[in-house]
Length: 231
Ligand SMILES: Nc1ncnc2c1ncn2[C@@H]1O[C@H](COP(=O)(O)OP(=O)(O)OP(=O)(O)O)[C@@H](O)[C@H]1O
Image 1 (cartoon, helix red, strand yellow):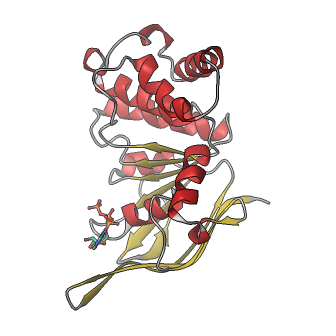
Image 2: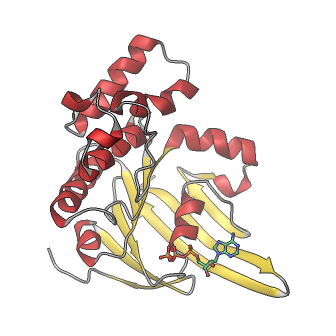
């Protein structure tokens, strides 16, 4: 199977008072294995809603979300939580690191849910920190790191359990250009050298241009494809 993600007619709607809000409207989308995809679009166009459906944080009102051929829209809340812990890494704009823990301990967190021994955890954490080029900062706390380094720790935490899917919501939104570019190169490497499938929401055309494919959302529908900037 070539695609990791196959979304078929996914709709998400909410009822508020007597109004129905439809952040996603019968959206269909395929994402290949090892593809780095960016989603752009105006505020309120449904980008985060779509990302949350792909990551199994939320379920669609109707439609299918096939990941690896498995329709996660059919899973119960607890099945979805278990599925997510195994298959998805989430990267946030503001890193969401635990301030009182070291970089090492932050990266170790997702592994504490599994049944690895301490030595196995150590090998995985150090491999992830090595991949983001921060093994020399393992004992630093987030406040002792730059924004770009904090985001690298957050990426190490997202990949430490070796998920095939990474979702990133504005991962460079809080970074200066140089740090942003280095994070984008890292995400590109994770797709190209490590086979991760990455779906990234961004408002930054330059970040979007770093992806293999860029899609534009408007009012809950895909309206266009292509890069706003060339490489
Ligand atoms: N739980 C909810 N209940 C009601 N409406 C919601 C809910 N979640 C999202 N929405 C609405 O769905 C629409 C799309 O929201 P979404 O966060 O997906 O947009 P976005 O494209 O990510 O925007 P931004 O770029 O500002 O983050 C918005 O109008 C929002 O108010």
